[in-house]
Image (cartoon, rainbow, N blue to C red; front, side, top):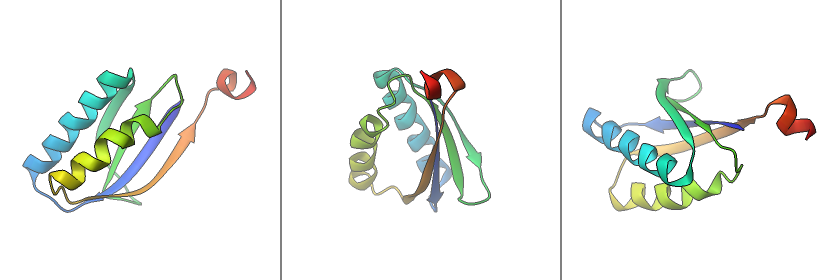
Length: 90
């Protein structure tokens, strides 16, 4: 399953690097693959997550409290799911 996550960001290069490192750490912990950030059209940043479990809430439970604790100026905008034919039909 592909998760496309979009967020607005108004921080520094260093903060963006911290965000990237934190998301990679979470992806390693949850067994996901991550790619990004990309610079999007509908939001400042776009990340791609590939997950087999489909439990996209696991990463958010670690990430969002970390954002608040570290005062990172990132705001989730939206997310979309993309599935393969096999994932959709079973």
